[in-house]
Every structure is written in C-alpha cells, then in structure tokens.
Image (cartoon, rainbow, N blue to C red; front, side, top):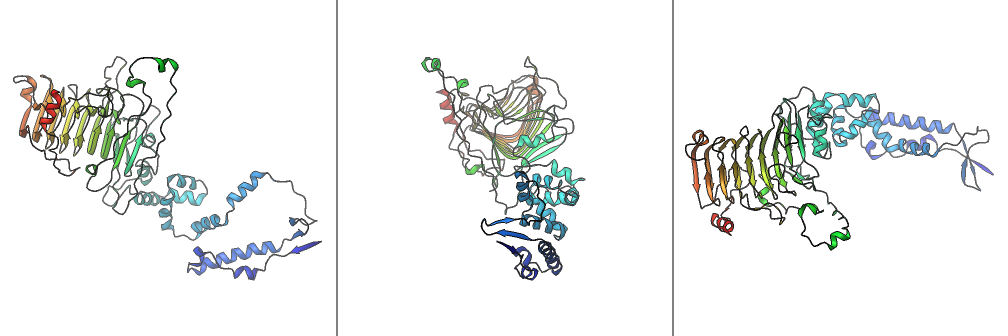
Length: 520
C-alpha cells in the first residue's frame, strides 16, 4: 500500500515566524526578497512527488524514476558541509544586504587567516579584501594604527609588516620569518607587536638585517578598556631519559652539562615589574641549549620597546651567549669577528632586564648599543658589558642595580663578584642614571688605551668594593674621559631614574652587607 505525501502549501510556509536575525530588521525590501526565495523553493518541491512504504517506513522514489548510480559517502559529507542553512543565509546576507562599511569591521573579528581564505571564495570577497579601506579598518580595530600615527602609503603592506602576536602569528620567530629570506636575512623593515602577557621562547630571536632595514619588537599600546592578557601555556614536565646501568653505578659528580631538565622557572613577577599600572609582554627563555641569549643581534638594527626580558640558561660563557641581550657580529671558525655591513646596532627603550644565569646586556666586537629608560637588575654577572675598541655604549635615564650576585638557581653557575657596568674597551656615555648596589664595583673602565668614559648627572651609591674605577692617571683613556655632576657614596639609598618602577626604599641591601659577603 502506497500513500502519496504532498508538501505543505505555500501559504502555510509564509506564515512561519522568521529567524530572529531577520525578524528584527525593519527593511521591507529584505523581507520581500527572502519571502520570494522561500516561495520559489516551495514551488519547486510542489512539482515533485515522493512515495512512502508503510511497511519499511522509508522514502522511495516513484516507479517511473530512472535509477541513479549510488553516490560516494564523500558527496554527502560535502553536501552537509556546504548546505548548512544558517551559514548560507548569513553569507548571502553579508554579500547582498550588509552595509559595505560594516564588512571590514566584521572581518576584523574573523582574523587574518580566515580573511585570506575568504578572499579565495568568489569575486565579491576578493574585491572586498583587496580594498585599502579594509586593511585600514583591520589595522585600526586591532590597534596597530591610531590617530596621530604616520599614514602609510599602502595599508595592506602596513598590516603585513606590523604583525601582531598571537593574532597574526603564534610566535615572534614566525612573525620575523615573514620578512626573512632563505639566507636568514631580514630584507624588509618589520615591527612585531606583542599583546601584554607571558611568552615562553624555545629558541633565540636572531636579527640579521640588511642596510636601512629596522627590526622592532614591542608591546602594543592598548586602551584601558582592553583587558585581554596572554597567559603562558601550561607546559608538561619533560620526560627524563632513562640512565644506563653504567651511569647509575658510576661514582662521579653530576655536571651541569649532563642534566636533562629545563632551567628552573622564574618566580612570579613582583609589583615593581609593572610600568605605570599597565601590563607588558614578558619574554622568558626556556631552552636546553647552553649559553643562549633571548635576543642576538648579528647584523643590522634592532629596537626593543616596552618589554620585560627574563633570562636563564645553562653554561658559563658570559662573553658569547650567556646574556639576556647579545650584540655581536658573526664569528669565524677560529672565534674571530667577521666584518659585516651594517654593524649590529640595538636600541633598548623602556625594557626591564633580568638574567638569573649570566649578564644582562653584552656589546662586543664593534656593536652599537643605546639604552634609554631601562631597568637592568638582579643579574648573576655584570649588568652591562662592553668589549672591543670599536664598541659604543649610550645610557640615558636608566638604572643598573643589584647585579653581580651570582647564579642563585644552580650551584655550578656563575659565581658572585661582578660590576654594574664593565667597560673593558670602547666608548661609553652615561647620563642621568643610577648605578648602585652592585656586588663589586659600580662602573669599571679597564683599558688604559681604549676605555673612554663620559659620565654626567648620575649617582653611584652603595656598591660593594668601589663606586667608580677609572683608568690610571696619565693614560690616554684617562685623558679622553670626563665626569660631571656625579654623586658617589658608599652608603645610602639610590634614586631610580628609569620610571619603570616606583622610587621605593632600596636600603635593604647595603654596601656593608655586600662587602662582608664578598670577604667571606
């Protein structure tokens, strides 16, 4: 027995309530078009007929229908994927009825990866994505550009070479790779923007840029209403390799080179790490390789702005790698610097630097380093080290405090007894800075020929052994050096100049305590 099932009449379908996103619209033209589309669909259903078998309760085609070959299962999966009524209606509404000025704002919520895929669907979306106004709106909505900034000539290139991590790329290395050739050279100026939060680095950030190419890494300037903070992922503890029977039965001391675990994590940042009440991007290096810096500038220009660097690594080579920032040209196989053009140049602006295993900043073999409004503190070795006659150092409105107390995380790490600033060779100009409470000396200018120091409007307070160590009187370096308005004191509390932290009482670590610890 077969029954003929007729589709519901068209009038009944027209009386159905519309979806909320359509019923809320007041445009009568949109409603008429949607009703006409539904009427055409139902009229097409009315021209066809189906038969129902009551015993099997299955839909069967009419007896006059021509048998069709069965379709593969992939066809039905694709059919379900592309025929979702809600998605198709939404895309039709965006294409036909959505105001054109709202499309770029909607695309800003989709993200750059989906926007790139959307541009390949049809000509309409390809045209929308190709418009300059679209990329300007994307740059404004993601806080890459704001009123008062320089207006770029091409908004698409501006968005591309100002990538945001983790929106555009998952890591800083991947973001820099967008402007890097196969020879690992940055051929295009790029500015990597980081949202406030903690970032775990698995490898060193290396900068090798051509002439007139600038590489910048900085924290985004977000409004106060934006409160999204990136949290570091909860990494699982690495599995330790099974030791052989020989190692288990051997009677030897454990060396740091044989340890498999990652470096110990830093303690939670204190309130002193906040800059004017706002969060910053915190870069922490966690790497098994020895003597690895967070940033290594080998060629070209690099700028770090409004960041916090927290460095710890294995190894004892504080000249070649065991530092938070390393400015040094590449070395030959016999450990000699290779002349490159341009020479490595780095600018640190509003950067908080700490190294639990080595030095804060190292500039050797002809690099050019500028430090402005920075806070370099609690490094295991020297806060700032400068070597080679062609190296240059400029420090303005910065604090170099509490450095040289050794590695407190590992018993085989760097021993204590280092200076705040160690000028072995080169030219150093220090203005309006505080170099205080370091373990050994505040500033040491060593070479009688090439260690030239110009110190002005600064203070050296409560350093361990000596506040200021200048070249011997009568040497060439001493004749070219100068000091002006410098406050030297063996006791007292320094005044911080960097504006990264509040001017708090730092007298808890006195010079007498440091001197007694050194003698012991």
